[in-house]
Amino acid sequence: MALVSRRVKHLPPYLFSKFQKRKESLQAKGVDVIDLGIGAPDLPTPQFVVDELIKEVGNSANHRYSTYHGDAVFREAVAEFYSRQYGVELDPEKEILALIGSKEGIAHLLQAVIDPGDRVLVPDPGYPVYRTGVQLAGGKVVDLPLDSKAGYVPSYDQVSLVDAEHAKLMLLNYPGNPTAATVNLSTFVEAVAFARRHRLMIAHDAAYDLVTFGDYTAPSLMQVEGAKDVAVEFGSLSKGFGMTGWRIGYVVGNPTLISALTRLKSNIDTCQFLPIQKAAAKALTSDLSEVKAHNAIYEERMEVLHQALTQLGLQAEKPKGTIFIWCKVPQSFSSIDFADYLLETAGVIVTPGTAFGPSGEGYVRISLSVDKDRLKEVADRLAQLDFNKGGSN
Image (cartoon, rainbow, N blue to C red; front, side):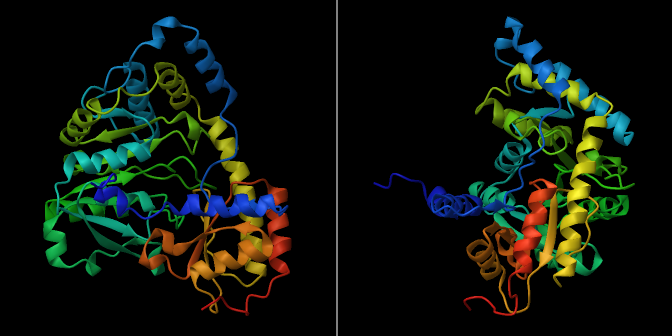
């Protein structure tokens, strides 16, 4: 008798865990490894959020189970945030659900709405959890190519009519991971029109909605007229507020999809610890000045690294958001060979683009998750390398 299910057995190893093992091995040999691979913000959670958590933990009434769909204070804070940030009105009772991080919510939504064999349009390149989530739900991944020449917007014309007509769900992600792509509202207008035309639903991952640079403000899919009829949008406090380990997020939008996700989750978990929800509510209803301060630091890092890459002859668009730079690898390398080369010769970890789908070949994702001085050290190390040597292939 097999002790492990076929679904789990056939899951690919999580690439970031593989690089973590190699990092630990090199560090054990005394190598000073600079990790620009995983997308984990290094800036601390704002102190006022920490203080709120401490206060709420001191209230014994908060030590009980949360309601399955999340504490009313948190859901009302999400509604207030959407009203203030996007001009979108949401019903906290029917159109908002608290999550134990948006990653959990996306994976569980797929299980809540996908039957075995159902097709799901998945961005290529895109966050790896989308593909594994579809696989765990028994669905079929259909690549949704992103047009690199047009800012990585969806190339709907490259999706066959059969796939479009039989797809049940489409996943989107802006500002984008790994590409750092940012869009204006017209991209979401087109997405809603496509969903209506082919009678499918949209799940938009907006985890980086608050991590933006300059005068750019990321739009919400919910700003499109009729979006609630065909879509939900996931949000997270992990990136904008530096709250990755707190595991708190939310989903808003279509009441039917949210009801289905609530039913599934009520059989699996009992939501997040109440003090965390209440501290997150404090964050969402703040003036976002701490978020803006964090963004200024990430933007400064981005400028340092982008300039260094450009001087080395490496091609990368200057992003308007996220904590990533999506960089072309030298022609003599594949994505995985280039990532291996940087790790072995410079002690620098980046993520090969192929981790994010077939169209990621030829790129690496570089995270802005270390301070400016360390990024300058990265630039110095890369300047010593010969990018014409090529990889092992």
